[in-house]
Length: 437
Image 1 (spheres, rainbow, N blue to C red):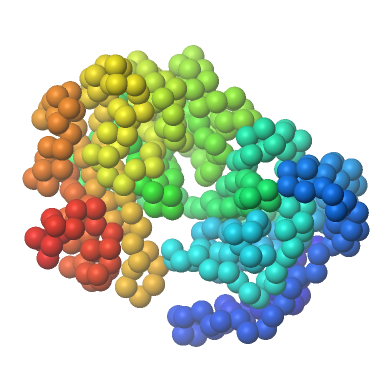
Image 2: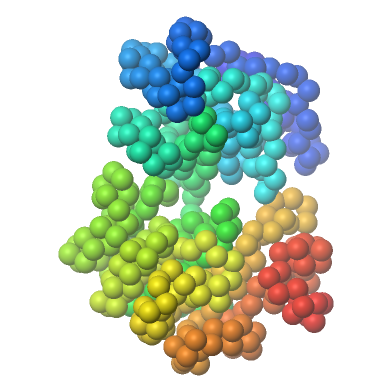
């Protein structure tokens, strides 16, 4: 079953033809539910009625362990239809399972997440069983210990980079049932130049010109942080002879070694934690270290330590502005440690890029960003606990490559890439944007 089910393939071709003709995807009127493999019906018919909640999921996990290889392969090929459908319709994310999805398969296309009725509906037992089949034994153990597990997934579909298409997935409990989010990992890297950084900022991101310091790429989930980070890594990979260590959970885009040796270390597979990966990197002679996410004080401290030792470090944060990013890092520590962290951060921080993906006029999305480059004044503001002054420094720092989100939204609106209403919807400081408008 290496190809799509014929009925599903027909639906996809009809959608594609409609999209090419008018630019707007028609609603699929034909209702078609892919038929589950027979082994699913057999196993699910044996689930004891008394098994409820987590016990029910554990029972299904035991049944997955007992399956023959051919049955597990058949089930995975069935699930592959939904991942292939993501690629066909240009979706960034898939969501399924648990009571939240109402038995339907949901996809995010151009920022909007909707159920796709053409794929039918599924019982919670059916999606639980399908999702458990995607995991290996170690990942199942993590799921039941932490009630969530991150993993990567591959399709036997060749991407633009000549490698299999890959996905980042999270399986987690949703009120005693399993829910899945799967994100398509890009199969090509955007050129750094296409992100339209000021030449001074672009120069500062390159190891050739600035060989140390911490750069943070921040934004909410789905704001394109990983794509920006990959563009920066690829630009350095093509520019200078060096060693890059990428630590992620999971690893997303796999970089080919070009001028740089590029190592990929996946947390939970190649290394137990982000902190361990960072500490171990100190003994691996890296020039550039990429930390997938600074998600806890241990990772932040290790990141500051490796930056302090003279390396160039890139990482991400789930924050919506440069000032919030600085406050978030400091706020992760107890009050009696914050002054020390504040001084240390001020010394090693080089750049903060905070970004959002806004709906583009005519379809698609466009990147809006704010950029802070650490000047002596910005360092002093952090050390003196006056981060509120930094916004004005960005507002007035255009000649140094800085820009606020509101200034960039105004630029996009003037270029008619987004509407004024979209600019206001996505602004952090609506009063400042109103002044510009």
